[in-house]
Image (tube, rainbow, N blue to C red; front, side, top):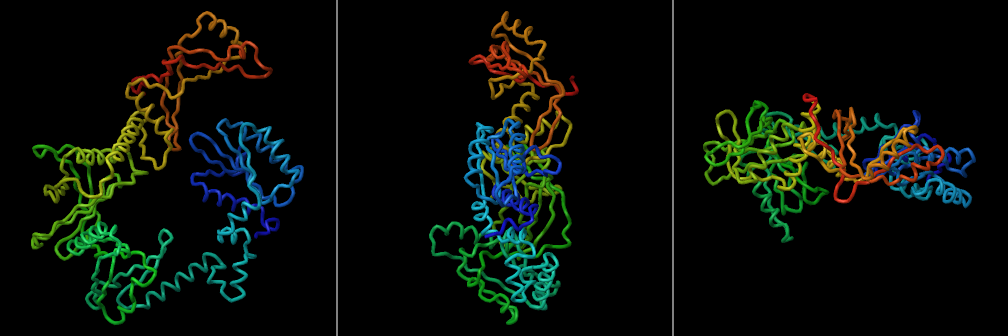
Length: 552
């Protein structure tokens, strides 16, 4: 249990924000020093907002603290999107505080849902997060005190980065001393310990050769297809070079033939905490980068689509080499085995693709790559060409995503390019983006292409000048259910966190009904006059075609 009332309030609030960001990916935190609109952190999902109010108060709330919390709630209630407000505080409410929260604040916030996450909740969350406990406790951390009692300050990194650097340097030095020929490099990647074994010099493999032979197998019959694929990939790496990762479950034995000293380095790999083995032939440092093309080829050897690629690495094997290349976007990677003339005829080199993710890639080169892949799905062959020489040609290579995935991505990219051409700004493919944003982009892109787009809503809201209300109502009395056409100048469109200038947008609704005539005719004191419309059944509201800036 943490003694919350003895902790630094700023550290407590920051640690709670860190916790919330871990629990809710996509959470946005605010810096209250500049005015945070009543929001310490908030989460947007499907157009609705969950707001977290974070406080460090660990004792019974004073009158001033209650007033501050209530003011923050009142400020945040001005945001129309808010659906839930959560007070996160290292204090479980007293009966009086519960009454204040569930009655006074709840009635103020209705229909917004309120919740109180107190000390019990925070204790449960922090219990399994030693890093957060150590952060808020600082030098008084229980872990550090236990280490100091056993003279192990550096073992738990008591001094932070300097201790980490010292330990990492020490591990590196000990690893370097393991072999005069092979460099052993430990690393942590995605939470897993990875050990790289590489030659210290170009002569290492000759002076201290290592031969590795894998025996594939598994008692689980469901693994047989995966084992067959792993065996084929391994055979190709041996023949043409490359690299691969093999799960431990697919191996019956790993036979390593090496010197006595080097053999001791490896021990019995399958009896230790090893989850996978990664094998590879070394890259050719002298191989030049080569420009080329990945193309789709239809009837009569006609090229139907093409995208530029560039080789960036080459690895040699026993009977040839494997070229590694990427497209201009950087989102497509391919492996191209190139056999030597002396390679046995029975060897069948297979091209492999790794498609995506394209997040952060420019839309134009992504589009040309997708056009090639979709053409291959439609029945065209693919070919890889460097200069005038065709290095590979065949049917769909391994690694192609599902057709629906490519089609959805192609539609998104086409819409991005339409927006890009209209605004004159380079646009990159987004990562995670909501369905709502995608639909909005689709509508804007269709309007830019010259289509009328029916909006998802059938409601329209207009602000009326206070001195024009009578004139406005008189006009409606003479023409009930009239159509509406309105233009918005200098309109903007927000997508993936960026704002784009669209120019003038024009909306049209053939038949609209005013739903709050009575409220406008008899307005409440101080209420701004707002006209609320709803479209007649089977009509709707439309965004009319958007003119490009060049035609305006």
